[in-house]
Length: 152
Image 1 (cartoon, rainbow, N blue to C red):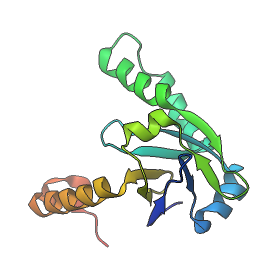
Image 2 (cartoon, rainbow, N blue to C red; image 1 turned 90 degrees about the vertical axis):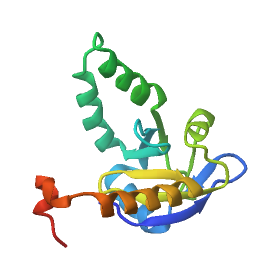
Image 3 (cartoon, helix red, strand yellow; image 1 turned 60 degrees about the horizontal axis):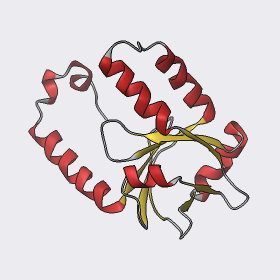
Image 4 (tube, one colour; image 1 turned 45 degrees about the horizontal axis):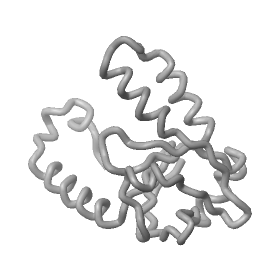
């Protein structure tokens, strides 16, 4: 399971170095293989260990090709999906279309989300955090059944 936010940089070739604390689990449990795709709700990328992506692919295969919304989701997630492997230095190359989608240039944030990572442009991440904080403050959490029973 992945958690925590790490500030990282893209190099001139469009590569990122996976933080060291994530490299060993990715290597040991996932053979250093990832699938990168776009987030259909936020301007960021999603990085899935290949076994996690296989579960997503099964769900995607069950979506209809005749329902416009389902077809659009399949096109986005599968169309941008890119398989990659950590190199010997723990780096992965982000293809240009994926970097463009998430507006990734130099500074980025890699955010663990249990079974996957999100990869954000650093400024977009900071903006999203502030927007999320405000949304949480303005939300009636008791009205949401799952959140009403959630405590830390």
